[in-house]
Amino acid sequence: MHRAIGTSFWVFFALAAASGTACWIVLGPDAFWRSLGEDVALVIELAPKLAGAAQVAAFVPILLSGEMVSRMLGDHAGLRAIAIAAGIGAVTPGGPITSFPLVAALRAAGSGELALIAFVTSWSTLGMQRILMWELPLMGEHFTLLRILVSIPLPFVAVGMAMMIVRHGSGRA
Image (cartoon, rainbow, N blue to C red; front, side):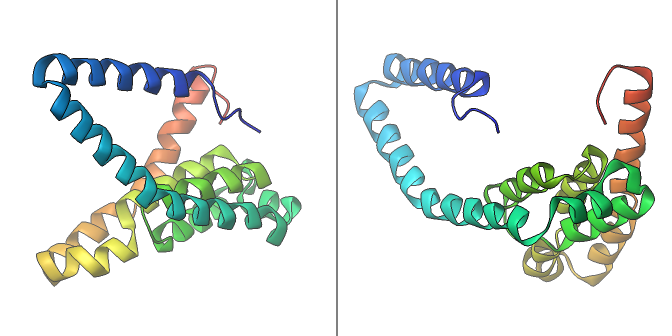
């Protein structure tokens, strides 16, 4: 399990402190306090969503055995794992606050990194919720179909590139 307060926390904390200081200096204390109030409101709005996503992610290892996840999505499962992960990614609703806890849960349950790359790439390029709610109504059928067709190979391309990088470097995937 990862520590809640690690290097990434301190990097973001430093960036927040620097930007808050810059806001105070450049725009004054009124702008700083207004911005801080908006930030607190955003945290309050996102907290229930994050809690719900974390709860769903906590159930994944319980509902799906590590053996099953590893068998279906492990790096040894090959192209089938990539296709399954890409399919799951395409139908996973919501933004990063809901999908990345699921990615972390799949990783903890035994999914391979290549399948997770396929999942995230598919979720970000082929998300059905986004396609149905935004793209199709705003961009029309022709554009949406064309964009989906050219995006279908992207999870596989991303996995292939990851494999090439690992083969030529010292990565884990």
